[in-house]
Length: 454
Ligand SMILES: [Zn+2]
Image (cartoon, rainbow, N blue to C red; front, side, top):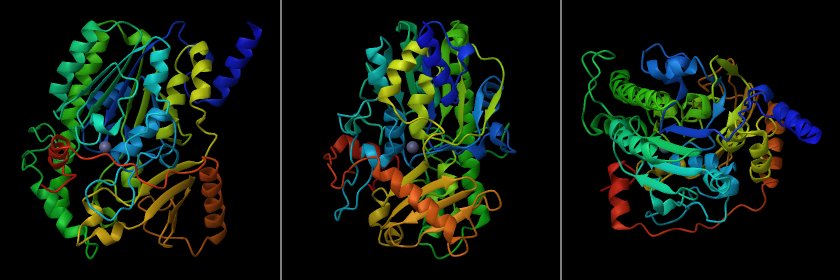
């Protein structure tokens, strides 16, 4: 018994999750909510002036809010694979590759990786996934590993909730529920919200966004502010509609008396650009607009707000979740997910970019490179495979406008060494893509989300 208590004390020290005293006596349920494409600075609880997220803000009042939460990659597959495996993209290999033919340059997550759902299932959890990103969370990409139920459907949050609620009606405890909502992703859920934006945002199936892309992505001029404002209205409307339905899910859990034995995580896989750095949407590069993601964790029964400024990254998630479980469970899960929050460098990686941007005749040339960001607050180094590396001091320069790479050579060198050491410790990276064929059905889904030209 004494040894167990000592071990628990050590674990509590090194993970910024629940404290030893707050540990549940029995395995709690886990609800992981990923709001696809939501950057943290568009939520009220992260300082946004618009009232996009009243329900999430209220949730934050009884949860732990991570101020510095970084996406391991600026797009869906590598970021979700990191959240599920506890590994950076370099190690799990589910990312893009440079290939010469524009059909598919993405790896699925190889079956030999241990996922959080697999580990929890071994511990007696029932695992259900309900995903609306039908393009890059389709079964083809193998992120379903460990889930008993894996429902994929490109629908907004109100419809997805119907499937979630029906599953909650029949699932036994303990359960692990993963929900991916896509309301804030192109084409944005613009169901009118006159309470937020009046007149309401334009509903246009992505036409304004395509205009912005055409204006900005060639990299020759900045976006016109009127157009940016209109697209942001669409995006914020999507967040507001999502917020309402996350509220519905939280209410559903409360009504079922699950608050005291359920850990709830609200986060995102990446953000979105609106013309900053002459970029639009996500993927493409590792600037903060695409990397700053919300992370809110409410421990089972937690009632007070906490704020944590320790930087964390997507691949910390399995260990952060483990630290919310019973001491015994955390001890068994820890060796499977060795990445301990606060004890490793924070790294984000982007390999070239997704088709079709990589092969676009007007802007594909901008993305023919690997970009990796490594942080040592306030400094952030972007190491670029084309030699055009960048260094920023995020405290004075949060928009990354003032490149200090020539002015602060010692800092840049130190960060580059940190990055190299960290990646080398991950073992041999996958260098060849292990591509899956794109079936007609998946092609249609990818087209609907703007990932492939029709
Ligand atoms: Zn995504």
